[in-house]
Length: 200
Ligand SMILES: [Zn+2]
Image (cartoon, rainbow, N blue to C red; front, side, top):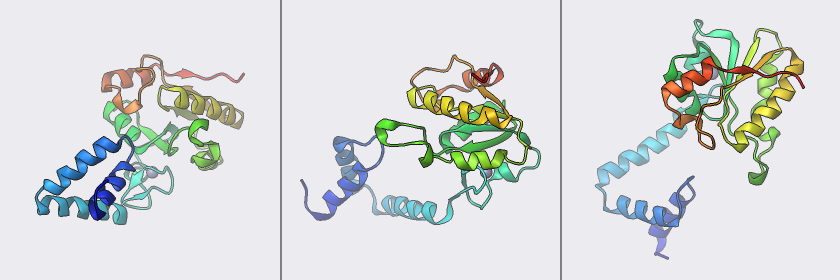
């Protein structure tokens, strides 16, 4: 344990995802040793991102406006929605240039162990987007791991009775990983080879 602000910094850093106590300590001492100018720039960037970046009111992607760039773009196909877990997955799919539709960002995946259920995700909002019949296909592009699969299964059962076509990305993605780690070619192929989910 350290004194006062140093320990506070270690504690704050330790609350970030993927940062254990050792990493938090290493980062804290890196910050302590860094130039004041660099640290102030980081602090200002953190503050600015919280003040200016919001979530799109339609798809919940990060956005500087009430609607994100993709939702505002009339050239994007409004009949197809690609459902992803996080905004970083939107970036991964955009990189493939395979998809010209719109997105819906759930804000995570169903994970009973972590206490995350359907009500904690933007699922109700997704259903509302389907209400007027414009959307004809929903592509489920959740992560190829246990939580992602569980979320996709839950969504297919929910969405199929609503009269939309539901598809899931083709296999070939590294199992157990995150969508964002798939390379562009693999992810692009997974889009092309997506399979439609049948009502069961
Ligand atoms: Zn949007």
